[in-house]
Image 1 (tube, one colour):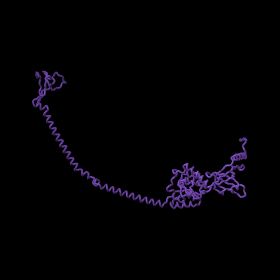
Image 2 (cartoon, one colour):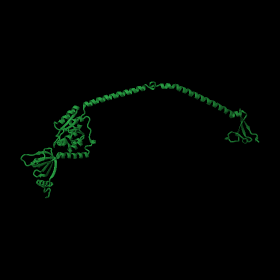
Image 3 (cartoon, rainbow, N blue to C red):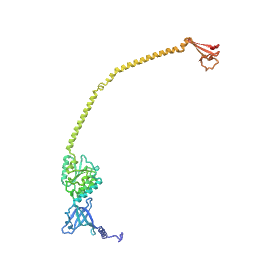
Image 4 (cartoon, one colour):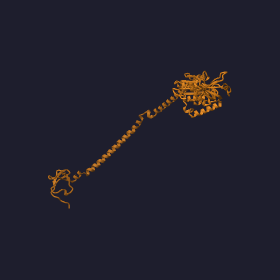
Amino acid sequence: MSNTPESAWPVRTINTKIAEWLHKLGQVWVEGQLTQINRRPGTRTAFLTLRDPAADISIQVTCSPDLLTRAQVPLTEGARVVMLGRPVFYTGRGTVSLRVTEIRPVGIGELLARIERLRQLLAAEGLFDTARKRPLPFLPGTIGLITGRASAAERDIVSVARSRWPAVRFEVRNAPVQGPSAVPQILGHLAQLDADPHVDVIILARGGGSVEDLLPFSDEALCRAVAKATTAVVSAIGHEPDSPLLDLVADLRAATPTDAAKRVVPDVIAELSQIRELRSRSAGALRNWVTTQVRGLDSLRGRPVLANPFRIVDDRVDEIERATRDIRRDVARCVGSEEQRVDHLAARLATLGPAQTLARGYAVVQRVPGAASSSDEQPHVVNSVHDMPIGSQLRVRVADGATRAAVMGVEKKN
């Protein structure tokens, strides 16, 4: 049958086709958590709601009331079950339900095995690593608390925290802590408190319970939400033998709600006592340091060089004066010795000089240029008769003066 705007299918046709397609799917095994059981006396059909434990998704289930009666264990809301059924589409109402023919409750052993598989998966993803855990604030101003309504856990946490630090504030969110509606409400409160900038730390608290009661705290969606939270989360489930996965994902695991209050809120009396002790120790250390420094200064001031700074100068005065006298004496001796040496050299110079030679009758003969000679010619001492040709003008220097002479003749040495 063609399908065009001119030949559109009626509602009955599309519903019939959907029903035929779902019928082809055949029987399937489905696992979930019972959140509602409606079994009316005298009716031939029981209505149930099956919810996905890891997401806010559910499906309507129908079955024979005898099927519920023949169950291996009594089926209650919150029970984990596995069902065999066929999807059915009701063309009249346009709704889908699952018509089941077999219901098997999931035993404790199977639940623990599934929790173990989930633990291995989350560990492989690094959600349990110590490096990603956030430190708790030293003094939280506001604490977010998610717990059951009017529970002993809430009373213990609030009373212990305020006895330790009266100024602490709480943002309390009440939610079911077991059963099918626990995880969705806890997730909503967790997101709300994590988005509140005034909340410094969040505590998830419950006063212990059986393995079945603690199943919501091993829910995958809750574990991943706690891992994503930007605010530090404390797990205070109040149990010891069994550890839900929340303990491994949370930033801190407390043994009990009371222990969570003690570990999140510091004791004001203990802190004040420690402050007084630290102040006393600091003051004592400062006094000891000052005393040590004063003693050091007194020791320095007591040293001779600082007690009488001019003593070192006075001690050197005599030495300086003695050195000055020695230097002057040595200089005078050196000057006198040099004067004697100069006098001796002057006497020798005078003895060997030309003046003494002239005084002994010797003369110095110089040839001077005549009128016909060049004006540039200078007088010069003659050493040979060859330097004194006949007619040469001579200057004869003796001890008491000089005279001029002319060469009249030459007598050569034989």
